[in-house]
View 1: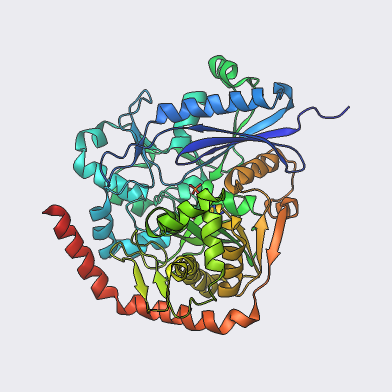
View 2: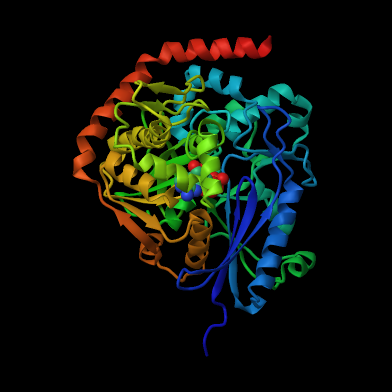
Length: 516
Ligand code: ADP
């Protein structure tokens, strides 16, 4: 008789929602559901979420998925988890939250990050943990909490991330998968144990953190109330899974050397998979564990698709409106205008640093620049320059990735920007590599589902999952555009370096203006 258990449910806890996916043994996403939860941002530095609301969304999300897909509980092999990296909250002895969840976007620890980075400890901690010294890092958040909310720091029984909270509430144990733990700045990259230097820096012992477990760790014994809410059997295994960044590589099938995954949604990232931990000696890229002896190395940029949203909403509002009047998606209309401009925008270069920048520069003072503007440039040149500027940003991360891991053979692209054929072609031309588009845009959730099948022994090794991923089209680099883009990426990199002191000056000026 056929095994009735044929589906994995993936629960991907992102920044705005938890996406639940029902995935079959062929790797096909049969059904998807999103449950949203808010981010509280009472001031620009604060970015918090309510962990109970997120737990609730996970259970509702699984329940609705089961109903909408008319799946039966006996058909579910397991639920496998992905979650956004770098979250931190404090809980008391009973596991009750003492703080909201501080997300990756919370910037209150900025000063602590700057101080630690300047100290001798900074580079050493990075080398041991692979997590950049940045306000997003839970290690740095702990330094902030200890100084700014000492009573809570003292009272806290544990410091955990969102997935650990969900697992604790369901199964009564604090466990953290190696992947999520490796993005806390507290885990030693090689031993996969909590790092003694990071712990002493944070001022706590390992008993105040969860137990690190492999990605295929399973918890079984869903309480009755949760089984009722989700429509699952109480003995359905819950797989710890991994963090969303590394899982995006798995979902994209970029799990063999030389295969790169590139995602541009609101922000962006370029990553590759390696078979041993690799800390960039210059601290420009991160290194996080995936599972099964695989690691992801790469860099995230702030100024990804959000630059094009800014173009639509601020720079080219009239054009966007015209697109809407014509019944088109404004993004498609704007890329149509950009298409009329030749590669290189007739000498217009945009440095898209509207949000400061992470990899590879780690410079929160960098600001946006149009360079080379002349009378022959119109709005459509500026639109194309923004698109090219985002690709130059990705190029600068890719150059470091290449320096560390060797030249990539292909790029697997996903996220909102991969919807645009023009953008994909620019990427192939500037990075001088073939670009493949993925069938599914939900690469982290799909990665979590693949990991679930692997955790239940349906795959001998994760690298084999590459064969499962489906692609929907490819772009080859156009040799006619090579020279133009080589010249302009060089100019772009020089401009960035030359403007460094002026970026500091304008950021200081802006800060002064804001405080008046
Ligand atoms: P999120 O990170 O919020 O999940 P998405 O993956 O939906 O974001 O990507 C949104 C971004 O993708 C937009 O800001 C825009 O830059 C880009 N984008 C979306 N649709 C298109 C399109 N049709 N053409 C070009 N770019 C697009």
